[in-house]
Image (cartoon, rainbow, N blue to C red; front, side):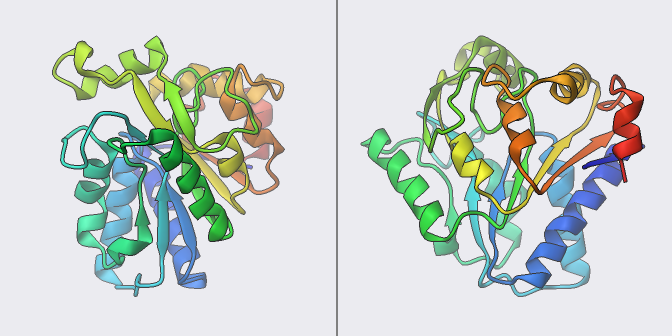
Length: 249
């Protein structure tokens, strides 16, 4: 199902409302969260709504999609730092209910296995929030990632490192490895919301619309999911065929 809005603000407000509705309907929900510039206005809208109408989040559990290997939680470009700055520091979610991959784990493979096991122990995500990379990655699952993958170590593609270089002082500072939730972990969520905004997502959203389900385009795995919502602004949807707009609600 497509939801297409005129502006980023409208996309962010709609997405934040969906998150809030889920929390209110199921206070002990398990939420899969994403990072990146697309999510910043979403989290800002969510915080604004929670400030106006506070909700008890003490039973909420969260799992983040990914983290760079080699960056501490205090590093300004780590996703742990991002989540604290943009969301967690302003919410009353108990720390033990917040889960992020550990980029400094002494045994990375064991940490990956433990992360997927923790998700499965909770029954999987009730709602998974996703962005999409310019090469179609979801989480940090790069092209050719097996759709049956669980949380794992990934070597970041050159395209991903170029795209993310804008957040670092020097391109050479961008890590080459990351931990990412696997595609199977993502697909087991009961509900998925994929958000894409801006001109830099125009091409990949057109590719995703027309693509077969193929490991060369990781996001195409989402087409197997029975409860997927794709939320776009007009720029990201600019190359979609008329059929997509007819399907939009």
